[in-house]
Length: 77
Length: 156
Image (cartoon, rainbow over all chains, first blue to last red; front, side, top):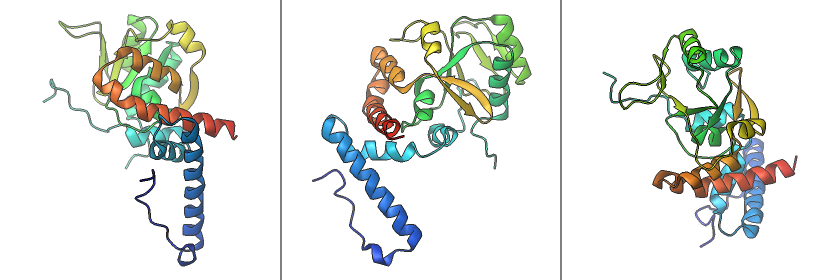
């Protein structure tokens, strides 16, 4: 099973222009991810794809996705 | 809902540290996230080359919090409302001296506050050296992010 085997190919003619642009961009990133992994077989293509997507966000947005908002410390009541 | 990633107290603390010229580096998973990695963290790990107690006390005060040099088993900390996620890092595994790492750190503006961030490859080096189970679990995602980042920067 390939790295993106869980995806189904949607006919792009059924998409709006915005959706089609998104899908084409996604496809380009997936191709880049596969190209990277072809030289680094220790890496997961899905991980690389999501990393490429993340790099399109601002640094603050990247942090926001992963930084939990609330931290409860044992001493807090 | 706030558009800021940081709490008001965290922003005030980072701004105070810059204003007081107290050098620090954002390290750990928080740094990795800013550099483009996937994952989650509960902490903002701030590595200080040296502990300037008077400066840290003043920075914490400006953020509405406090600094203590330690309490029982507790290492030095900055605490207070909105500062719960801030952890002080005094030693960092697998890294060069603070000055060397600081010199090659990456600059970011985060919520309009300037921060120096440990580069992703150095975060990976640190996590490899620390060799804790949770670090080992994060390394594949960090390595994938580093490969993507290098490819991304190569295409700019």
